Amino acid sequence: MTTTRRLRAGATALLLCAGTALAACGSGGDADADPTPTLRTPPTPDVPSSTPTGSGKYADAFSATREDSVYPEIGDPLVDALHYDLGLEWDPSRDVLTGTQVLTFRATADSPTIPLDFNEQLAISELTVDGTPAGHAVEGTRLTVEHPVEADGQYELALTYSGTPRTAPAPSERQDFAQGVGWSITPEHETWTLQEPYGAFTWYAVNDQPADKAFYDFTLTSPAPLQGVANGELRKSTKDGGRTTNAWHLAEPASSYLVTVAFGDYQRTDLESASGVPIQIWTDADEEPLPGGLGTTPDAVDWLEDLLGPYPFDTLGIVVVDGSSGMETQTMITLGNNDYSLSPAVVVHEVAHHWYGNTVSPADWSDVWMNEGMAMYLQGMWEAEQEGVHIGQKMDDWAMFEARLREDAGPPGAFDPTKFGNSNIYYGPALMWHELREDVGDEVFFDLVREWPASQENGNADRTEYLAWIEDTLDEELSDFFDAWLLGEQQPPRD
Ligand SMILES: [Zn+2]
Image (tube, rainbow, N blue to C red; front, side):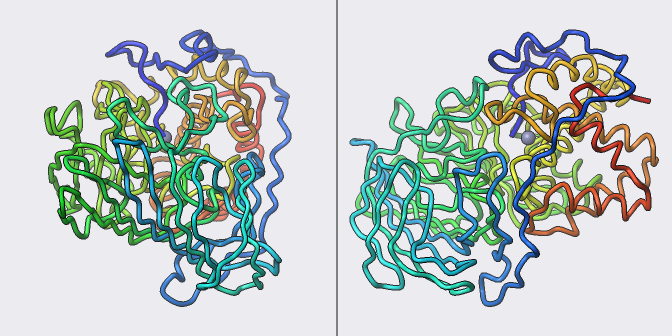
């Protein structure tokens, strides 16, 4: 996800932090850090022993599920989702979503029931497990299915549901989260989704936690001129009786927060990176086809591939929606229709997440800094290049306000759970990467930056694995350095 929009166009260091964080922005930080920094206690995720070895056609979606340490009420480690087949029909005349879903999952333990995330706005008319009707109940955001499962057994849960989805409150104070997370309906009866750190449960039955990756197929039906856009590749588009049905296939597993579906009156523009990555841009049919910086998307891919190696997926897309945020939804980036979200810098940021966030995703929300720190650092490098300033100057500018972000929302690796997505998870870790780069030199640093996502293709990791990998690769003990940047209540000293 991008940070919230700029305070004013052209300002290089002034980035707006939403809501009450506004006062923290742009003011001077405490450059003289405490020599004995106070560290916040790190989160203690319930870590699984190891990633299971998958077999069969969904092998790459086998996940080491866990209870999230920040948002334990969402998701359940019992379920390892392997494939979601989502048939979604949108009726804009009534704002009604009708879903026909088949979830293939692996149980990670014996249990008399199956727990999933769902909601009370959508009425379930039919639910079966392996073809047999099963009792079920929805309470709050929890769907409980009365069907016993055995450890390592695979099951097909099919359900049909219908209703008007409603967004859920976001655990965040960002202004671009004000409408809540999940399925949003516009005044024109078009729809879009934003679901970080969760919110997929507002429109399908899901294990809505980042540690559980799964494959997806979407069959999206709506009356013309609306059509459905989702992650992956558009395999088929048919028109029948004034209705359009688009079939999308996501060939690599994704965490639920990286899933996007939008129904709108769209036009499609096809672009391609220098390396041949096909890029589809989906924008409002009544507006220009490539608003803002969207025409620079191939350049963003080229620039990032130079630094990070080959783009890790087969396709890339951008869908512009009636929101105000930017989100790195896997292979189909979701951008709000405003100047900052559509800027070339945000395009670079969201494409960068395909290496940092998407091919390797955090296993726990306490490690969202693993996504945002590197995406922000790469965005900063790109901005410095565009502005003709040295990256060190850019980092000095950011350091001016980073200390205040940390004070407001906590250290990046132990943030206040009610302030998800505040700027603290972006700027401190970006400064940390720059310090490491200064320490080890460009060649070693960019080898690290390239090798980590390549070594974790379609995986999940937490900080324990990531930081141990860095220390092993560098053959250097860095725990004090990482602790100071990730858990320190104050900004650590900079070189
Ligand atoms: Zn981001």
